[in-house]
Picture 1 (cartoon, rainbow, N blue to C red):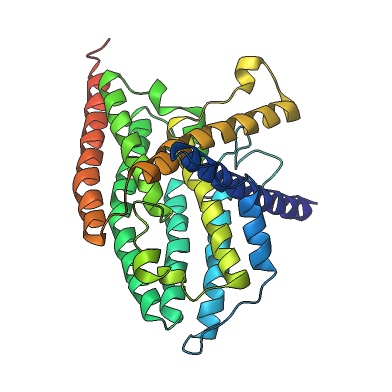
Picture 2: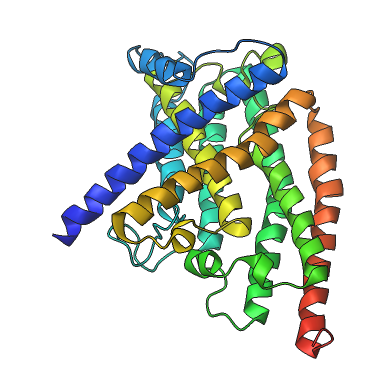
Length: 341
């Protein structure tokens, strides 16, 4: 019985990741079009695109390594969906819910590792395609990934450290973060630090998703699609679905770190209805996060050069993240010393 429940949970979360991810892409396209004074595609256009790709055959280039070329999109999709198993969806937490996919295992560190797997799979697929355009795109993806991982780690470690100072057990646990919003723990100095870390995470999101201004690995005008130039049909559909699920995961991670509140306690609700209300509220928060970190950024910014990406993330955003971490450490030291008591 437990096995069947686990399988059902995996299927439901996978379907949720696909549908929510494609829905978010549709909302993103509409928001970008409206800001550019265009009509834009319908909300269902991403679903139509995926359906068309799934109906087409996948072409494997003559110079490609077929096994690695075909395995890369499967690995990317599986890892992107797996991240969702570890993130709370509203009040549906990974531990203690009717969907026990992971039990008590996994935390923010594991989520960070899993978020890198789709990018690594795309790099492997790009190199395996045997195309010079894809090889250049794969090299750019590796450089971009190295650039944004450090600011992301700073944001996550700083928040977990602050929770540990409060004496909370397992500060990297998603359940701990969901039950103890960081804004209720820190003081005035820590709030400034958290705002800086929120800015850092908002800028890491477009790089994680290879979206403008950090779409240098694909760069259609320079590399004809970059590391995905040789992909078509079902393989390209799997890569597109992995990016859709990763969009939900990145926005869900920001919600978990900075906006983990739910509506059901305020409305006095419980049971299935509470889970439904909290899930809808979670989607609203994800849309807001996506609008500011993806849609707005890609409308107002042009594509960065690859050296600009590195200098931005290793220079400016790392500095901002370290300042935010310092302020949170200072806040924890001040409150521990009782200066505000």
